[in-house]
Length: 107
Image (cartoon, rainbow, N blue to C red):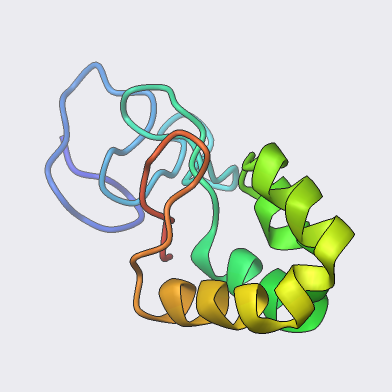
């Protein structure tokens, strides 16, 4: 069977395409933020925008379930902006990881 969204071959019993994350039963529902292993993934663009606009408050860290780092960034205002800038560079270069150690999903 082939995915109706991305066209790649998938298992006949698949409920979600492991390549693009779209629901096979209902193609209008996207599940790209749930990995094939059932673990929640976090969107690259959302994390980038949160870091750019609210990085000094650590909102991007709270979003990606890095709560301890998020609290530290909130208290120190993102390390006076330096910590937020480093995270922004890491997000842009795709080396930023979520709280589970997984890479961000770039759709």
